[in-house]
Length: 398
Image 1 (cartoon, rainbow, N blue to C red):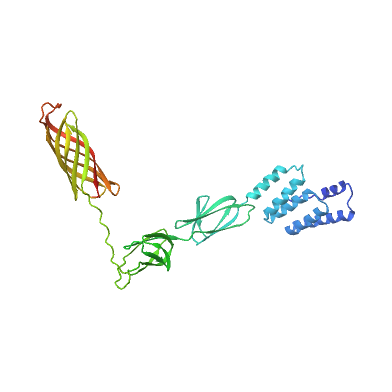
Image 2: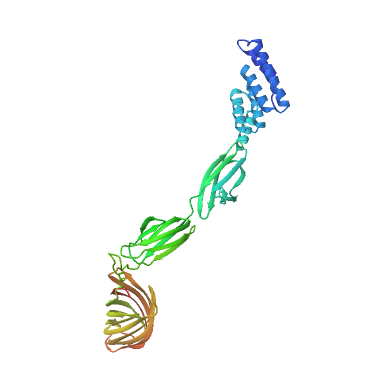
């Protein structure tokens, strides 16, 4: 409610060190009366104007309070807060200070309309991480918030603060939708053009706008490959260009055959383990061999049960690939006679392009006999279960 401060204004006038002219007091009184009349008919703008006229003629903080109240009725909350603060600044002894300060805080937090639009439209809208609908969208918010838009993996974000119920327009432009184009060619370093613009050489991989594109791959002395493709948002398009030597071109030349990978020539292997025969006798082997296809055959020297013997064996890989299961067979001849079969796993073709190596583990079951009676063996003739691990080095891959 407006404060009826006419008596206070007159008291303030009488308290001036130098009395104001009678016509000034009269004008202030009339302006104040016109303001009250305007409020009675809810003409808030006229009331504000008349209150400010009265204040200019005879300043008093209670008049500012009335001005603030009329601005609040007009929903011009920022102006209302301005005059409420002026009222508190000019009236140090205001008994309602706590109430007015609470009112100022509430007006500042008053929710207002927030209109959210995105380019392109239809993006999902999140307010402080919580889903709120799809753009275009209008919400009622108050205070600070983070507005996020998401569409097809694209994202845009903006922080806002809504105060005094004032409307806020949020326009979010999402990045252009893109996909990936990957181009390969049978001719190394062939030129790649997209929509008439050179983008690199094959093999090429890059982001393109979501659209239809013309991809041209060319190389001197070869025919040109022209293909049309559609790039979709977040997807990868693979194109392979097969260029053919052009017999009519001045610089025509045959397509070089790809280099075949070098096959392994020989291998050198070391392994070790135990013959489980009651006393877990140690055994080890040094061998050289020859890999062919999926078969490794080898010859070497074995140590087991305290004796040295000649040894030979074979490993048959069951699959291609880096990790290969295999079957194996081994025989030793000498002071230790043994024969067994089994299998294991090999991790193959590790190392550099020059020297590669395999790591293998294997086990099996067989028969062993100690021919040298002086050897240190608790079971010179027995069934054994070998458990071995080793490394085989070789040139080339197999």
